[in-house]
Image (tube, rainbow, N blue to C red; front, top):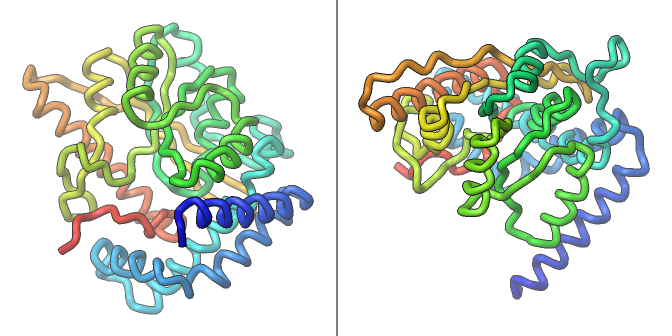
Length: 293
């Protein structure tokens, strides 16, 4: 099938599903997305990659336990898809009416008010868009660096859905890097998801195996002397979440920039690994994170 035709058909499918989800409430849309995900997802061929990744990363799990992780992963992905048309409806900092329990909001406030730049990092866990919402709803004009969808028509739909997050969004690449540099020079805040494979990165351990990992957070933090803030999202139940914003990492320098970058990047991977071990069913195991054996 020609790529343009395939992209167009994908666009029609995503547009139709988004339109359906948009007619429902946040809770019902999330629930329907979860049902679709866990019903169809495990039967797709790509699930084999997730099973292989799990077997290597968490070999201590039984086959039945891995099956439950796979089901939970697809449920979570389906829910995220159902929640995209409702990102503007997700309430934070609204007391008992909030969809998100926020721990560590004081760290966001401090970075917002001190006039210095900062780097938030997170992973594809829970509904990862909550990280950016947690900052922008607190008054931070966040720079968000993201990976674009391969299908440009689907990409436009996703960006339209992400518009209620606010802040400024820039795709990974040369232009995105320039925007990051300018933002940090101006004392602004940048957010990145750093758990996926980055071919131009450095090989550092992740679940016991070397994985090509972006060193951007470490390089920029050391270059601009800005804090690095871990931010973690957990799905608690349905469309209810916990966002935890941690204190800045300790970034001691030895004078060997290459070694320092590697050390900080390993620290970041270690943190991400622990988050994933805590909630394995909420991570994106479908990604080709490690090289083939």
